[in-house]
Image (cartoon, rainbow, N blue to C red; front, side):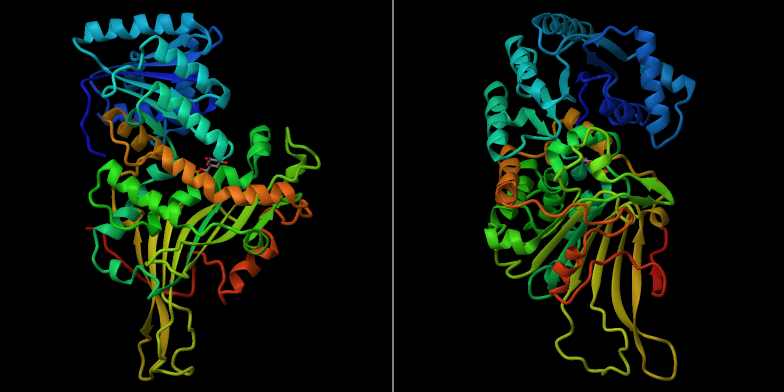
Length: 510
Ligand code: BG6
């Protein structure tokens, strides 16, 4: 975000042939390169334990770029230039020899580039490799420059509070906290960053952003596809650990945080962690009453057969892993006293949509009566994180005509209509931030632990209690019925972006 481009960079991806490197990381580096955001001197090493000819690696990565880059296929010229900086590095993550060779290579680069380069070590690996990689990096002094060397750790960051603490201890023993970039890619999404701009660069919303005017908040992250080939991982995670503990709680933090003192990493992260600390601890009764879990059955998605979760590859046929969670939380502080936050996420849902809905309270006195205001839906601010990427304000207006009739209208800001510039992928933003040493959008140790604390009572109650009757929702639906009931007690429904029937007022392109 700050654009303090380093003069040179050595980028080492452990798991350089893995799915994440292929689909996200290297396409993101490629796009940063073609947009001129990478330093003049840089090398990317994809570390993988099996031998692979350089040319084959290059071709494999090019396929990933061509398939997943939002700008489409790479031109020959651009690719050739980029590929000159990309190297396959055969090496076992656990053996000393790998790090000895790596050290020689990076030092050599520093020499020929005329000074110490920034080093970025990306852990795109299974959790069991985090320890050996960290120990070896430290032992070989590969990441010993506190200001220049950074490590990036992917989720899952631990599997519960205890393991997250152990992981933090392990990492902070080898590196300084400011060198550790715990990634939550939701924080890099353009629309999530815009939420900060929306809240803190405008005066109009702040005065109503509290329990005097807001009745409740909804956060939905619905995915349309099932778990696909990720059954093995997902069985251990489930929707609570895979999505709520990280992405949804982080979205909640951005909605609920107090204005930070500055936009510096520590100030922003302090305010976010305050939100997590203020979340009302869940009692056993809360877990029973306010948390709904679901698992999808066999059914149809877009006319095609969708297997039941229990029939997915590498999934236990009697699995009690949840593929859907809805829950109600409260942030116990002055601003949010008694404002429920409803969160839901699930796989194989009716459509892919991630929304934040701020539902305002009704007017204190209805001046106009039922005949004039026929549609009494409250004011709502609907922020679509993806895929629509729009912000919509629903408010009431007089319909043109000789009679007084009041109906809701919709005021819309969409990225598509407002900007010609493409929206960067979350990984582009985040990787550039790491290179530039800006940790604002990354998770600090205490944030991760505070988030685990929030979900711990749920995990414990689920472990002790009897498993629900799964499956309990059909693919292509909005999850179990109980999720609708959870929000109904508030007299509300889960809200989607209005499609038809509401008159739109659009912001024009400038
Ligand atoms: C990942 C989860 O962190 O986020 C996946 O492990 C999920 O299960 C993904 O599908 C969703 O990310 P996005 O950016 O596609 O909404």
